[in-house]
Image (cartoon, helix red, strand yellow):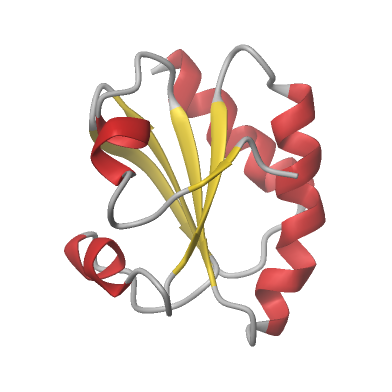
Length: 108
């Protein structure tokens, strides 16, 4: 399970004001590629515990935030650091690619 569920209501407090970098998985229940990526995101949440928070945002239930960040295709994964998106990937990616994205965001 991801660390928390991200909503339009808690996005600012949980993501933008977080002192820890946050990986947000923008997804939807009907999205097959999202279901492929979800277990990988869960693994990353465990592997990076303490270094990065991981949240999942259902774009159907939270269209405002997804729209604010230009999420047009899902899954979209964004790493936020100091209230800003620093890395983004769109579409189903393998674990190596997602780890590389998180590592680059943490190092940058």
